[in-house]
Length: 602
Image (cartoon, rainbow, N blue to C red; front, top):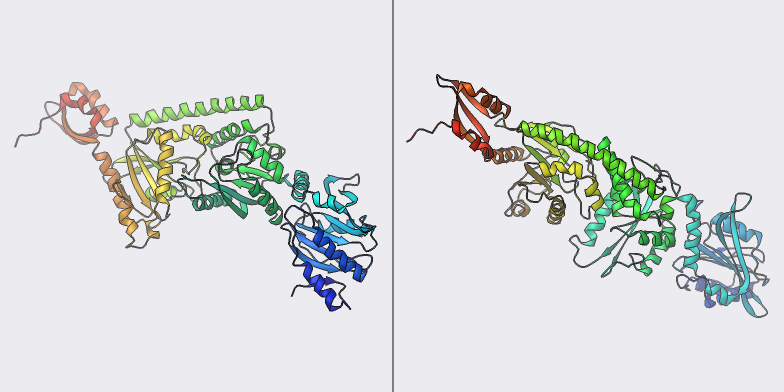
């Protein structure tokens, strides 16, 4: 049986039944009360001559019932989570005298327990009248939060008040103080996405990945919503009904952030923030924030800042709640300027400056690249979905100490290490930023200077987390980004990593390669890494031609050139010249054809 709170002594059985009946009544969402509830409460007050109070949740369910005396009613305890948030509960109580004006104890209770609103009802000349009190969202001259009062009014006017709009309006005003959170404060996030037909990743997988991204960024996920729609809503991305549902949960879950699983238009982001009263970001802003946290090198920081500015530029007109903060939390921090509330002219100037600096870095990279090509040291690039184990593989193969962590985008800045294969073939192995589904186009463009390592590579090692049941979709996502980089035609060796997470007889071990050229390995345990190195070596061996050359002593510059190519395997001096056994790239075979010593006939 439900509990009747307050002064319950000497209550007759039929009165207790009437009080118990109040728990069975409900109020439509968005409405403060109903005539049925008001009548039921006033009937008990007429019998007892005492105050009766009910406390309703945002969903319109009666959570507690309390009975008092002629002047006041004892309030049950409620969990007040924050001094800057509403409690998610409203109080409706009766005034036996018929004077419904809110008393000082009423206003004190409203302020102390932070009710969504406080309503008092009574009878005046046979009609139900009501008064209403709620936070204005502003402060009075004494610095305390001001309360707005309305009434006495007729019952019909009370029922016309849009509670949802009232709460979101109050919340939006209160959020001005709340959203001045620093980057060190914990943000409580609600995730939301739209499930549409034809998506490569199903909504469950995509939302699970969004949760991991939020966790990587430092947010605490407190709720998640998925809506099935043919196409996103033009105004809110989500349907209006779903937005109303989220607005309720924002208060119930004490959320400070909404993260959408797809990229929002500036107007959609603005509309959602106005309705919900909290910060709203999309997947793109979330990924940019993670990159801002991970950037360590000057180049990485420049590229992140460039991507952030290009992303925020079209949002200057509508990012009220976000741009009113100075670097406050996820989606707003960056390694460069933390103040994004600047005019377009300054942002365009900063973008031009960043692009100039990145171009200078690109020229420096080109110089190193030309030196590497002159030395004929092949470049092998590790590519793959984020958290596939690329950094762990680099560390295992080269003995490097590149940062590796079981979080998305653990690697941002590229790392290149020298590696000598078993047959003494030298290569450069470079680790690149992980790809992801819905990778922001602005990010690909901003990081093009870094990702040129992929374009210039002689061989791509496409690292795949084969323990992930959606590895095929992840492969497709990586190939999509490679196409955008115009690198999908590069020679590719598939490396199915984390095979140690599969049973030895798992059918996936045999099925995953299909017609792909690759190998199953475990970067963690070292399983099959020797086979991987052999495959890499075999790839480059097939691109080299073994030749026996007789170089006249007068052509000493040719011998110097071959040594610079590190192509000389054996040297012998004869009366006619220097006899060399060399391995040269197939593309350079014709260059040394005049010095070729024909193989002896059988």
